[in-house]
Length: 423
Image (cartoon, rainbow, N blue to C red; front, side, top):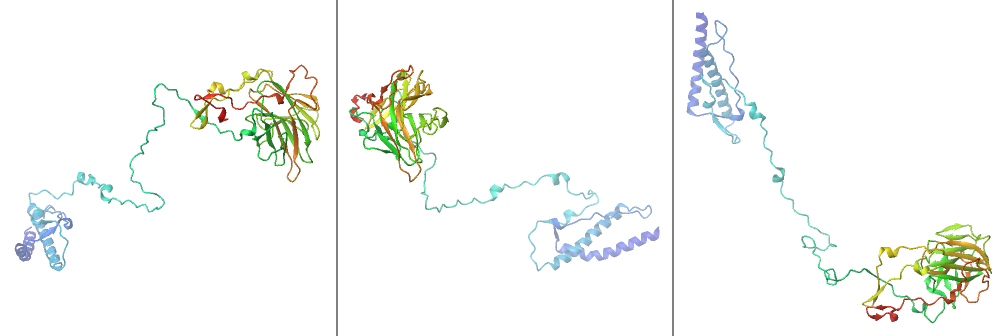
């Protein structure tokens, strides 16, 4: 036991002798350490000489020796790095890091502090504002207007006028040719209500076409009563065909008779009837060159079922039609109405029944292949017919279409002024 104590005392004396100059140097020049680079290792366990454990005084002496050795290493590193300019770092005195006998053992950082999240900076605040791109489009005019465009009140609007009714008006096209029909003329083929490719004779009683099926209609139509007219097939040619019959004022002029629901046709091939572009078996056989086709229509009390004519208003040199109510626009069927066709004075039977109220015009459509002579037909509105039927099988006796009166725009008073001159 005494030998062991003497050995420890000799080792302590040697270490004290070596540490004296270093302590003197430490007093002469204070040494500081950067906090992040300092690493303190816990002291080794102290063992007692007898029981295998070190005493408290020996443990404190060992700890002071380890710290002194670290001071020596730091002094050597500082001497080597005097020529370099280290980055400024936060310094802390070494004496504050020296543990004492009464100081508690070294502890690591608090886990609660490590668990706290680091506040993130807002990227919107860090990014600089982007400059707006200049518009180099020379085709677009620059505008400094901000916000929505303010609409100016219409000075001509009468919405705020008290005590006045709102009336919807529609412009009506002027009559294209006043000479197409006048009160002093009789019924004939129209120069206006026809397709452009349809050719009309000088007396306006014959028509022909070589540019496909096109329609031409007469200048006057009928609304009620029984009426009759004839058409003679002058020339069909090798490739010519016709569809003849009746059409109201809404029939398509660029199509054959019977193409839509506004016209009713009689076909030369197999004598079928055509309506809404549907062919149905009608006559025993068709007709050819030289045949005379008679057309009969009966509209008993048709004026009560015909749509009312538009009310015209003359305003600032322009004719306007007032809008009608929805109930007035409904098309009504004329009870007992019918259309029949005759071939050389022989009735082919009733072709169509229950016609809608309206004004019906004599119509014809012709067709031939290109580079072929015209397919020509000739109208006869009476009163002298070639094959006027002697018996209509109990039907009302018709009147010739030549007796249809002029029915241009009626002479009404519009805004206190007669519109006769405006027709």
